[in-house]
Image 1 (cartoon, rainbow, N blue to C red):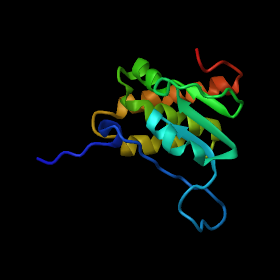
Image 2 (image 1 turned 135 degrees about the vertical axis):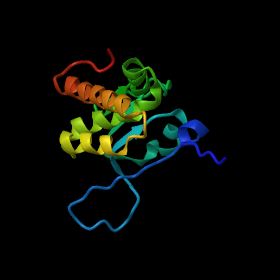
Image 3 (image 1 turned 180 degrees about the vertical axis):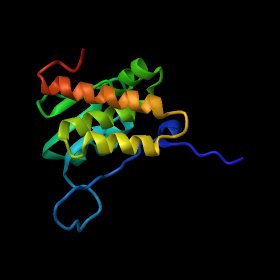
Image 4 (image 1 turned 60 degrees about the vertical axis):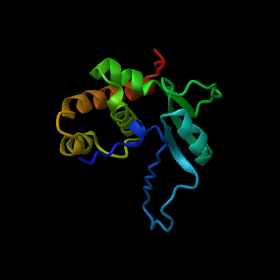
Length: 151
């Protein structure tokens, strides 16, 4: 039997670039990220330099314990802890982050996002993913309403 495991299970950093533009995209990698989400110490070490001068850094402060300078363009969110509290597992931390980013940026409608999660969630993970996604959306709404995201 052949098993494959995601980078989180293997313990190594992974990266995914998403480029959104109204113009032709002539290079498939992000050079100066407008938004950078980081979920582990190893990923922080590897990728934090890709954040553009005016970019927004969102990181999982339940996984990254180092001191990160306080700045209005840096948002620490305990994605793994929120996922664990909401679903009983930290496996849906990426869904919390996805809901957070989509609500904050409004790049995708909530209807389209919910449809994609229903369509692409692994068997047995749909409810947890939906719950985690909603928690991420709620976190972003609370930030937009001026609440402290660390409580």
